[in-house]
Length: 436
Image (cartoon, rainbow, N blue to C red; front, side, top):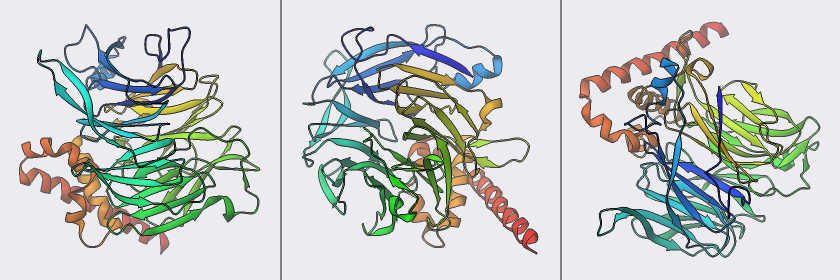
């Protein structure tokens, strides 16, 4: 595990007089990093290394095997000043061709890359949505990059069509601020969370509520928190099985993070207690991992609290994998994983950005792209009995890997598909034997 602090990556007047950095996001399969903050600006950075010709993010896994760690250099490519207020959130689309931003002025702006007459790439507004009249707190892209959902303090959630450049749906079944929105990796559900702990899971094909989770009122021992958090984000694991919800209430054991299981129709949950400070940011790794000993696949997620504590959770485990206390003295606001699955970037309320680089021994071996593709296709058979091919055409990993899949022959994909389907059958047979 290696820690790095980046002095030249900041918002504000200087390295000493920094402003709050609300959000950070790394381009999928690219070398661009987005940051936004209280200074009303969006900054685009390029991640380079003079000693390596290839993309440093993509080659990080090889360097771990060689036990060589190098220093990353950041070059500021562009500063975008278009919002009329602090920018709260920036998110890349799954294909990395567009990104979106949301600010206190209520606007949601989508950007795309263009070339100027000199051949240099610039990012310009693709479209500006002004449907909200409150602060935009969170954004989430659909897996096929055709839709964008935005949450706001005006108690509304809007779903925008990128192709038609208009709002196709308004979700307004809330009595408190809406602070979080997250799209299911398979494109079937959209989860939203409001300030009072109400979580609604919407069906994206009919926009009806699949499940409503009133977290603050389920248990009499739970009390609604008194301090108001700036952000309160939720997310799905990359396999789509678990919905992770940061706490909006307090209990006797401390602050709580909940993981709801999709296979039980969100009725069964795993709770993680013991945090002295509220947890307000959650981010899942974009890759699946595997241990050689048991050959099982799993996903990893990180939780960030207001007192600077970081927790890492392995999907399915009843306990936290490990915790890092006093990582930073100030509140953690956002995370972003690199596509190699081993590097985690963290932004704080003090304007600092730092990274943690893990090794394959600590997290496990990253599953290959083809294995990831076939595993998600097999696990969907547990979620749905019919219409798997239609559903899978909109999944996140399909939209990302369709270029790589074309290079593979049909027989190779079918072999992988048969392997992972037999994997689930053997797992079910073992469970039946244990019950007997």
